[in-house]
Length: 301
Image (cartoon, rainbow, N blue to C red; front, side):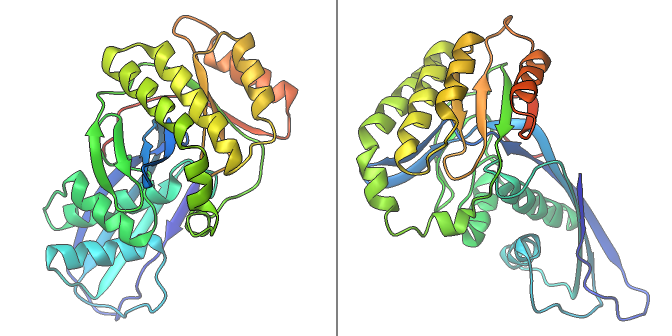
């Protein structure tokens, strides 16, 4: 569990303080990610792992020159709301690992935006939060309700696909890190995305239809196709093994962090217990980090 304090130092006198809190879910990569006709998009996959942020605003204090992502989110939110405070103190408590593709930065940024707004007695719409988040880095989109197609570079929501299915996941991280900002600046990214567009189009159609008709097997097939297609962009050395384990457990399919390190397994309702599945992976790969969690609808609390 990670705790971050980022206070802007007090001037040493009593100050009026406004407080707000918010929490945002992480993700298990994405159900689908790529481009269609050159436009980038992803289909969100929020999970029941959270980042909680509290913000305190004060009318006195000193300014800090170097701001991290959460501090930038708070400042951009204040600008959006037409407010200005000398002192912004941020505390974050998160179970989400960084640079793995589990939406940790987006969760921190989104929760900070809403907590800042709530300190002022305001509530931001998901579209406003996504627009602020996209100014900082590409967004995972879990501020939007349910499961949503978004342009992760602009933060624009394209289509709401309905609530999250009631499905459990096993999530595994074999190790390593990927910087989302650096990844999206790759010179070969456009050509690699163009190369996999036919598979991505098929994946998006299957996942979209599966979610809209509550056909989870169809959704799982689409997610698996997107995971496989992404091997030309960011290869997962253990994806073939992961798919084999998923087949052995009669899982609905697999998914990956398309710009991260983690892989997910979508378990069949009434099938293998998620704790048993996670324990199996831990026994096979004791050096991996493994979670079991569930898909949830996006949105802040």
